[in-house]
Length: 259
Image 1 (cartoon, rainbow, N blue to C red):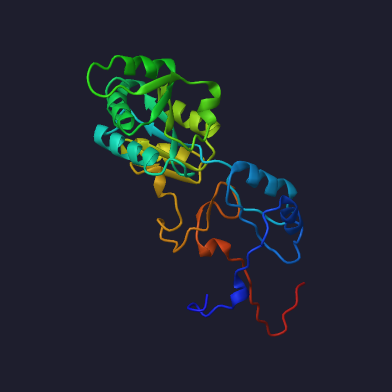
Image 2: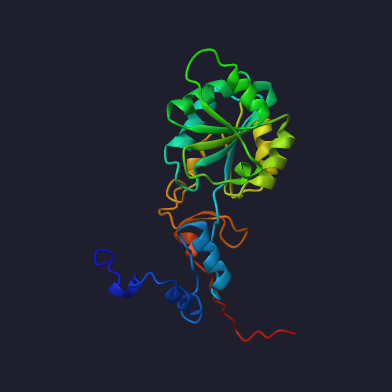
C-alpha cells in the first residue's frame, strides 16, 4: 500500500468468519457499492439472497469443450489436457466434453488416453463408452456410466463428463442448456464452423482452438484478475480494474434550458 502511495485504510479486513457479521455487511448499501464474493457456490448464493448491495457473481464454472468433426487430433489432445489437468479445481477448468459422432472412434480415444495418463476419470454416455471400450493398445481410461446430474456438474476434480452429439447445432443447444455460461470452446479446423459456434453459444467467453483456462482477467491483458462474472450486465466475463469503474458525466452550459 505504501509503495503505491495509497492510504492504509484503502484495504480493510473484517476480523471474523462469523456468518452473522456477513449479514450485517450485506445491508450496508449506504457505504458499500459492490460485492464480489469469491468462494464456493453456497457462499455466493448466500450473498445474493441476503444482499441489498449489487453483487457480481458466478455460481459455477461448468465449462465445455466441443470436438468438432473437423477437429485437429493434436490440438484436441493438447487443449483438452491443459483445460482439465493444469488446475482442475478452478472455475475455468473444463468439466464437459462433447464429441461429434464422426470422430468418436478416432479423436476421442487419443484424447481419452492422454487424460487417463494424468489420472482423469471419465463419466461417459453409451456411445462414447462403447468407442473407448474398443481400445486395443495404450492406456485404458477409467470409465463409469454418466448420470444426468454429471452433465451439469462442476467437478473441480480430475473427472470429465463425455457425450456424443451428431451436429454442431446439437452441440450449441446442449451447451446453452447445460453450461453455466462461463467458458466454452470448440476445436475445429473450420473457421466457418468456429464462427457459427461462437455466434450461437451464449457464454461470457466462447473460444476456438484455445484452452478454457485463458478466461482470466490477467491473461486477457486487463492488468488484474478481479473475478469472472457470468451475469449478463453490467460486467460479464473476466474482470479487471476497468470493470470496477462507474460513470460520471460532466455537463457544461451557457444557460441552456430544456423545452
